[in-house]
Image (cartoon, rainbow, N blue to C red; front, side, top):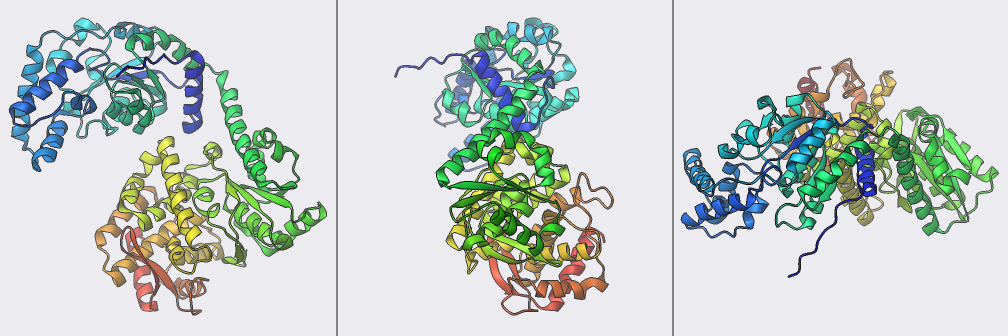
Length: 622
């Protein structure tokens, strides 16, 4: 087989990669000032000896493994590697004492192979970092003392003793982000302030999960495609090639002139996506509906899209209080006054208020014209923009009048999310958590790491798209909510009641926050009615709700839920009026047998609901 020789990234390649990272994370120019550096395969050409030592040790234990297999395990701790192989080959875990014995054999074989060469180019890489004044932290999955003890001789002054993270310092090795997060702690840096330099796919995965700009250097036999799968920001064919390019990369990171170009580039990409969706729709003309806050925050977007720049624009006053039949009538009149026809289309640019209101206007004007959604909030993207539900409120009753009308397209980008507060992100994230509960335990467990996902823009985007795809699949099979689509209402029967009551009390809860509390009530009822394990309920409270529940501060967490026993009749009345009920006054809930197994149309007696409300208040300390 002929090996394909890969060229090193050019300056333009590096600039694009840095701009893309800034777009995903909101990282500002000049933020980077540190490097987290792997050891084996980066500082030392040692992996060929490690793989031979591993292969010799396991073969003596009667296990047949190829040498190349151990390149794939690079970055894992010795204990994790041994445990993985023994579980796979023998179906057993290995005791700590046996791990120590086996790893000692492997370490002895590694030492017997003699002195390991410094990696060509590593010294120049370290000098470039030093010349730029960047801090350097060693982050290795190894505990191999023979190399660690040589660092000061081979790379004098490069790594202070207190700036080293080894296998002995972490509970979870790579691909878990813990080693790199520990490295950041050593220097008090945020993920966007450091780059990771790795030569192993699992190490790249750890660096990406930690939220750092991650550079892969292919110093071993692992093909480039494996690093691409792990989403490395840049991939270099050798340490020498990376050392040659590093001064340029450092200048690109520091270049404050990039700030405007990054923003402009992001808006241009989103504008092009909007224009492309409109072009495919083949409409005679377009009309834009947005709100005042979005219009102000995304001024460049409206100039980057040819369609948005030229289309008439209706600007709604922000806030749920404006999602009314009166506003809907104003939109109808505006469309008529501006010559809209059945060959026209509507583009809704905004959050759930805009996509619900604009979608309903499109569904009803001239008996229905097509529309495109461009969600600008996380909540809008995962909830209102997908699925074809459009509506307006009637008094305090949410979405009381509406229609089912699927958008022609949903144009998604994380660019507008940069302006969202933490509390706004958490509100949208609640709808993602809901999707985890009703779709799969695996997705719920990923989403349970709230900070980890929200701090990792790529992971957030990936999981957000998973949630949107799941909702789209469900709604396309049941557009008018006659069956399976009802599972999407998990948490909403109580959540909508909490939301309506909060407005009546003058302390309005954002929709996603109300649903977050509504899911807790639904989990309590799931235990009462479906014998769902209480561990699910307590895990949700301790891991998802309470860390972000603030009785006073609203900027960084969930707005507080406030109701008393005296308000139970009103809450029951609001739940009984829910449009999903078959008989008015008799609330129906979506409950869980367990995460991933939702059950629809469960009619719940008032006594059980009141008991669930009592437990909800107790768990939140109300």
